[in-house]
Amino acid sequence: MRIVIQRVTEASVSIDGAVHSAIKGGFMVLVGVREGDTEDDVRWLAQKTVNLRVMDDEEGVMNRNILDAGGQVLAVSQFTLNASTKKGNRPSYIHAAGHDLAVPLYELYCNEVERLMGREVLRGVFGANMQVSLINDGPVTIIIDSRLKE
Image: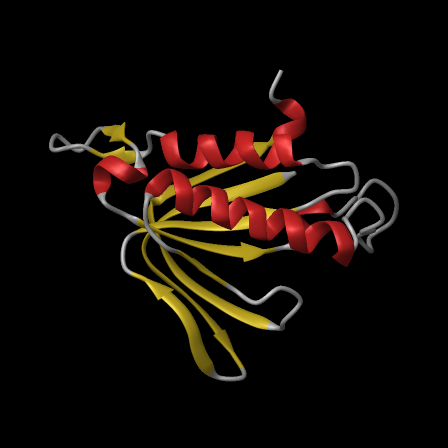
């Protein structure tokens, strides 16, 4: 499982021209589920998300986590994080999890982050054509892959 965490001053997801979810300050998280991913991967990534110290403290040093900063999280499923570009110029998504695995693990990730934070995680809509807008703060962008945790 791969996630991309972007520290944002604001982020939103729109569907068919209407804003579906929006946050002011926190993390925009893109979530990519691969075949073979498990609930253990989800729980490890949720812990990483909540405890990642990339939020500024009073001195402008990235020393606080999302909880300490009081930030929000907007999570969007993103199967293209699993693109393989080894051959040719057209990405292959053969390693992306199918709907039956990806939806429950994406939902579990959101629910687990909610549980750990004690507040709602806003979401995109799985499988929808979404337009994502954000202002990356810093910019700070962190990629975390659960298969590289050891």
